[in-house]
Amino acid sequence: MTSSRTSAADPAAAIRVEGLTKRYGRRTAVDDLSFTVRPGTVTGFFGPNGAGKTTALKAVVGLARPTAGVAFVRGTPVTALRPDARLLGVHIEPCGAHPGRTGRAHLRSLAALAGLPRRRVSEVLGLVGLEDAAARRVGKYSMGMRQRLGLAAALLGDPEILVLDEPVNGLDPQGIRWLRTLLRERAAQGGTVLLSSHMLGEAARTVDDVVVIDRGRLVHQGAMADLERTGESLEDVFFARTGAAGSGGTGGAGR
Amino acid sequence: MRGLLRGELIKAVTTRAVLGFAVGGAAFAVLNALVIAVASGTLDKVPEKEEALSGLPVLLLLWGLVGAAGEYRHRTAAPAALVARRGRGSVLSARIAAYALTGLALGVLTSAVSVGLALPLLGDQPGPALTAGDVGAVVAGNLVAFVLSAVLGAALGALIRSPVLGVVVMLVVNFAVVPLLSGAWEAGANLTPFGAAGVLSRMTHDTTLSVVAAGWVLAAWTAAVALAAVVVERRRDLA
Image 1 (cartoon, rainbow over the protein chains, first blue to last red):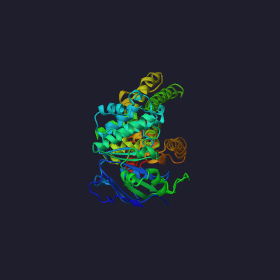
Image 2 (image 1 turned 90 degrees about the vertical axis):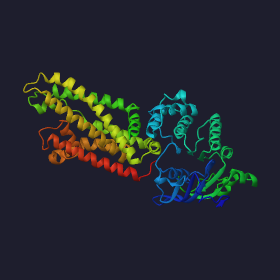
Image 3 (image 1 turned 90 degrees about the horizontal axis):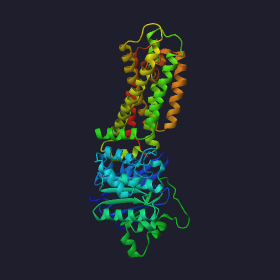
Image 4 (image 1 turned 45 degrees about the horizontal axis):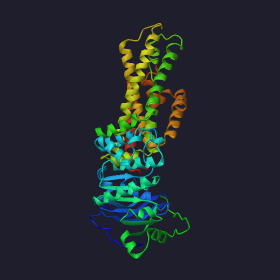
């Protein structure tokens, strides 16, 4: 494992993961994973299919209970944290909307659950470009539209921290550019983003820090700027650390 | 907690399922009134006439079950838990309460159809007519059965998490296991949730369990299953 940043004990970290392990029966999806996400940055979370990214993100946001280890959000163990859409906005695929419900109704229910004003629904629908489709049932949405709806749900509380699992999947080029701009603007304003992606070229244009895992274990953490200084690309690091170069390898552990 | 309830109510009433269950409940009420009051021959006793006003509590059980289990099938439980500002147990409690309220609304609709259609039809039958008190007691029993069944269904749905599996299990139990048990041991069958709901809604009469006792039996089952669902919800992973 390589790491150019030893901030695992940094109390100012937006997200800190320490020794996170998640097992499903005899299968280990995440294995003693530790990394830190600095506030005011976009951190990319990368790994081959089945590396344990989604499982780790679910543990970070409190949806999955770790077998061992702890995830901290702003210094508080996530298991002790009261869910709050203003603190943590999450989009983990699929978008979590009933196909028989309209996009607006989906967001209205979440706004009510979160104690947010109803006007936020229209605001985020506008933000993600779904105003015209808001009255249509989610089952009629394209993949990109469902992705935008998931992002709208994550943005509903205008959260300090965004955790996004493969947010560019299904987005068209305009959508990818829009998302990149949105995430960079949020980081510039002090917000924090942790995102997973398989689109390394696009992610390299968006992220400040890089976390790479393989078979549930951390294999690299560092800054994009450090990579650029050494002349390595994100893709170089990804393939070198995961051993997936040219093999289409998928890693052994489940997601 | 009001926000949680409002959010869960929005979810419960913004799919077409609520319309389907409303139509299904009303259709059953019409069919039941016609079959009992017209096609069952002479009804000269009050309990026989009351049966024409009975609803189908298992329909409300399915309403709660399909809705709550669908939260896991469609992965809508996770976004709710992530934004709710309360623990998962509170979110599930609000969801169950939402199904209780919508179950009450569906029950009122079904009872209105039953009473509106069956009472005129029963006017041709011999024997004592149903008094306003009789009708009120039947409607009250049906509404209690509907609400408790919706709550029981939502709690079971949260435990089972698969709408299809849940529906199959419930239909087999209601239409095969309980009738078989009832034939062999009527008192035991009445102590099942389905048996108690049948007594409470007057589908079953002249049996070993009083209506009030049936209400307590169904309430006990409902409370136990709802408690189990909340405890389990707080401990497990959400997809």
